[in-house]
Image 1 (cartoon, rainbow, N blue to C red):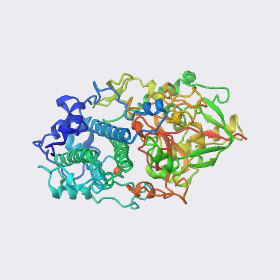
Image 2: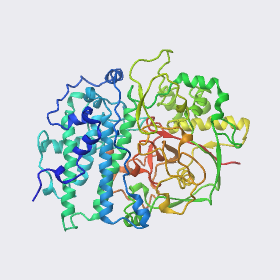
Image 3: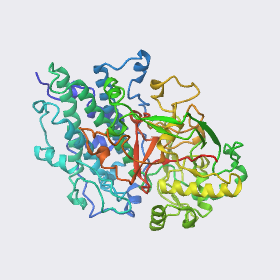
Image 4: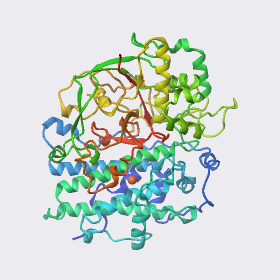
Length: 603
Ligand SMILES: [Fe+2]
């Protein structure tokens, strides 16, 4: 007999998830979970930057994880213990756990918004090249629906209840089908994406989108339960069910991070802001820069400690398809296949840590953003810098250019114990100096040119510092990924722990990161993605096969504009933290939690 409601059956119900984690009755999520939620009046037209501080004034974010703790997403311990592959059942349970955790995490991100102005904020578009927040609230369920609806039996679908209608179900599936990633240098160029309203009034009310999201989660959960009770595996083989769930779950994880990119562009909603005056003070006391680890290879503070890394000249990237099929732990996107080998130099000199804010500030002070012809040697990078008129990275906020303390909300910090706290503007920000700097690839390349020029005149006449290739980076990071132990018996010197999976909700000092590869190169995985100089391309163009569930996922971005990033950021869900995962962004897209380090092939 068919039960009446999914949540009676399934512990994965979104309702218990969202209400259970979102800080009691204060969260707007609990309001939206009621069909009696009042639809706040929409503001006229598009909200601009001047509106944002007012919306957030006086707001203190709640800790979305109070009392919850960090939950493991995938039980990789079990696989390691047995040395065997997951059974089908355990694999699907793990995929469901990952999906459930992703729902919880994305709700926590939305749940940090102040309830009093949530509708207005959801209609903000803090990044011109992306849609308003509300789009992504609808996009996640639409993406799931567009994949599972034809693969799980339609007769098992949950009945639709008000305020949702059948018409809305199909309308939203199209409206929220696909986001966009236009060419930063020419936004008229963009892959196929959903056509969305241009004014606030045309968007559906938030409570309808929330009801849609809740329905899809419950319907998916219910239909999966029905599928698991079925004896007929022909409808959807277990391996296909696993792939379906992992595709949906990883898509949610990815958007959880990109939502945070957007949120951090709102004034008042930022990571600990960069207090420019503090950097000036730091510059005046460079003698104290001995806090930076410096070794004999490099006494040049902007470069910091360096490390020589040897290799046998060959490194493997990606996985073979049969490894993915045989091992349920090894879900992989199309661009991670197949396994290939690349040549790399036998010896590289490498920055032991990523470039920090303080080190990057030396570059800024040295005229890095003024002397474009000198440091911005890539013409397209130079044009982008000149056109955007920027003076420092996007993530730096000059909150006190006038020398006066700015009023308004404090930004939050997360203490090592996971507690969220306030960080008053103007407070000394020493630790932030040692966070990795988040920049574009263009800015990283300019920094490399500056360092090469400076060192060329001083210590290493023939040295040219540059970004690592994807293959070089993969070698540097051996032993630094959580799945490294599955691949080989590596040195116990390495540590795959790191600042990823929302442990800190922000960067930490790179010198305090536990992450370390077997070569002694630190803070590679976590604390920010790392740019490589490699274009995003198929690992093997001849053998590349787009994913049947999401054929556009990679193929639309093999466009000679996107570059590979490796590792993870603090906002990267743990399931994505695997050695074969490849991220990609355009060289001039400035909103990514992306750091960098340089390498040098010595003459
Ligand atoms: Fe998406």
